[in-house]
Image 1 (cartoon, rainbow, N blue to C red):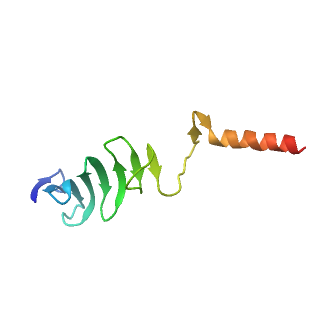
Image 2 (tube, one colour; image 1 turned 90 degrees about the horizontal axis):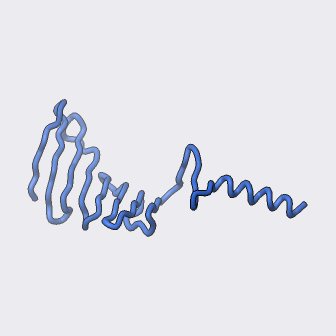
Image 3 (cartoon, rainbow, N blue to C red; image 1 turned 135 degrees about the horizontal axis):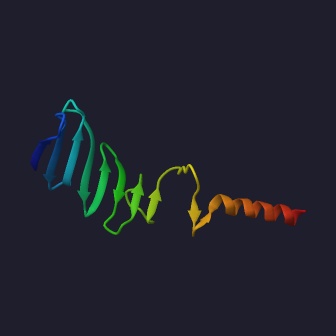
Length: 110
């Protein structure tokens, strides 16, 4: 396929490659210019981030898959999710709902 190399400030190359097998791809290299660190690829109208394995996909329909190549939901994560503050469903805190449910159960059980 076609390839274009652009050198950014500091000498780090940014290679843009177009091949029929992989679509359009941007490869990011370490400062040594030979060690590839990441790539961004346009694959069937989806934007894919990764290197040796896909890490993140944004589909043409707006779904985001993290570790999920075919996201079934607006955000589809394969693995554990951590939040430093809170997670909300329908605008309601999941931890607040769990606490309220536990209190209601304790009252009901006496």
